[in-house]
Amino acid sequence: MTPEPPQQQEVLIVTGMSGAGRSTVANALEDLGWYVVDNLPPQMLRPLVDLAEHAGSTLPRIAAVVDVRGRDFFSDLQEIIQALRGGIQLRVVFLEATDQALVRRFEQVRRPHPLQGNGTLLDGIGAERSRLSPIRESSDIVIDTSDLNIHQLATVVQERFSTADTAGVQVTVMSFGFKYGAPTDADGIADARFLPNPFWVPELRAHTGLDADVADYVLGQPGAREFVDAYAKALEPVLAGYQRENKRHATIAIGCTGGKHRSVAVARELADQIAKYPGVVVNVKHRDLGRE
Image (cartoon, helix red, strand yellow):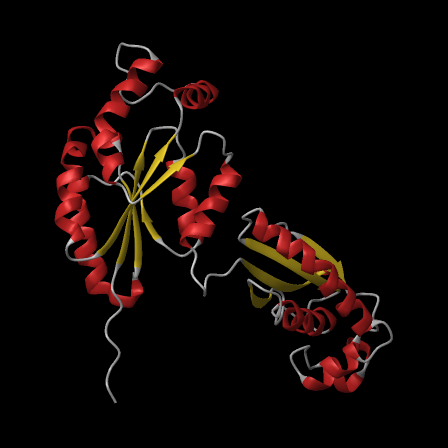
């Protein structure tokens, strides 16, 4: 059997105007599974690529944010990019925005431009635009963020750089016991205590919602499957909306008294149903199982 060829490293260099959204792009790429390094001196790009090649499939996609914060090191970026292009799959993403948009953003955060020095904010923007002009001309992708908010920019990144196996939203379905407190990080909480408690059935008491006899008992109660079906259906537009709004992680919690029987069985059934929705990847966590 012929072994598959090693996966070629994919490297993305994110650069552009200060205030144009580099941090937003970096965060969005990280959510898509890229290994992101921020404020990397250009001279460190080759060691980073060498490390990625050595790591193989562990680091298949790397994004490096390189910008004028690198001071004098930044002047070598163009030459280093050209040297790297011959050996790897490399793309340069350049973020730009109008002077008016950049001024507005810097004034909102009340920070000086990194090249402003003793001059005005527009002086710093103009100096940076001049310095970055050759890199912009040779970039593979130019994104004008003037009219984009952070959510819209994250959507642009999602559309351009996601792959077929990239999850739109990762959902954790968590069972828990109300007696130990409701989870503070849940996006939605449902209460399974309307169902009869298997704790009071002697032959089920020592078992958990992971066992078939308990699961059958819980889901066989009047209203149990109707509840799961209705809740899963209600979550479908919510999870689709999360994907549109670039909310990449969500936690749905199901509670019962002790987190051992009802919530465990319902959480597993709910997870099986919402895992069928497009772009949704589900994992199940039983927070309080084993505490009793």
